[in-house]
Amino acid sequence: MEFAGVPLLDAAGRVAQYRMMRELLPAEVGAGLTDAVWLSQREGIRLALAQRVDGIWNNLMLGVPKAGARDAAGQVGTVMAVHRLLELGWDPGAPPFLAARRPLFRLLAEDTDHAFTYEFASMGRDADTVQFSRGILRPAAASALAHAGYEMDPRLRGAAMRLLERVDEFLGSELAEDPWIKQGGEVALHPDAFPPSFHFLVMLSFMPTFLNEHDDFLDRLATWLQRPLPKHAARQWVGARPLEHPALLLGDPLAARGAVDADLPFAAFWLELAARCGLLERHPGWTQAWERLLNARDRDLIWRPSRGQGLVNQVPMAWPFVDLAGEGEAGVPGEVTFRLALIAKHLERGPEFT
Image: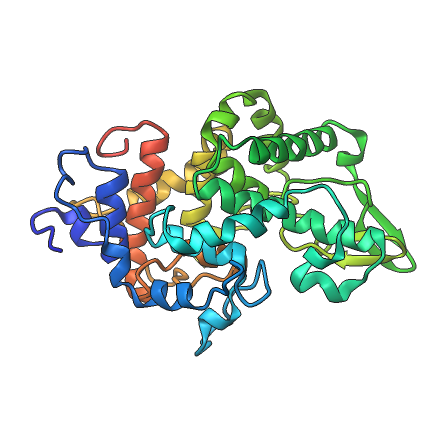
């Protein structure tokens, strides 16, 4: 599939080319584009073949491959596999997604069944621990279902509404001012704290109709995400012990000086995520970061890295959404360019994204 004479497309890898044609260009331009591009991807095929007949990958939900793993498909969790295949351009009606629907919808339920805690099963069987585990998995499952196009399903909308109400209640409470508790020399979040998580934000990003119904909430969410990151690790008190909850968003992930340049794949994805959620223009720092990336484009509107910029993703949770071409550092310029174009679309900017 060649796109000679179109610099923006020529700079991208095969997956990003396909998605640009499908998501960014007028329908008539991509009229001859085949939707079978995803069938030629080795990574996607291997990942799909690793799925069990019950729709689960590796009895995990949030697992991601370790750096340099030979058997990446053998380490991926169900939620992450669904996100990855969708990001690779797979049709939401493909068999892997149809098989994964049932276990993902099951995770939306408000219960404390230990059988559905997957990789968190070893943390404990008591009600508090199971509730904590299921509380991590619920927005993650919702994010995968939203990404797969189930925004209007009443089960997903109900779960999204409950999650939003809990986050909103927390953001408007006194607890949000200082949600940390110290016990026995350990510092962790209050058991009743309910900050937004990475998965919650991904869920919102693929539910535009739902988001339009809660615009006032986005102002409060944007204010929370402008806070500096805390010094404490993302842990929460569950009974008498603190348990890790790395998916929580406790401030601005790009707040540190040089954070964008340190991890450009994550930064570009994060800015796209913020744009999808209607948060980018509510956050001056992120708007400036996007504009700085725009200014690093050449005459063909292709983003080019500078010396010393980090071209390898360092955020495990972002794994499904980055390195779409599987080319590592070599594919970053095309991928960042693709993200900048997607951001421009969601901000309703012109063809030069100004």
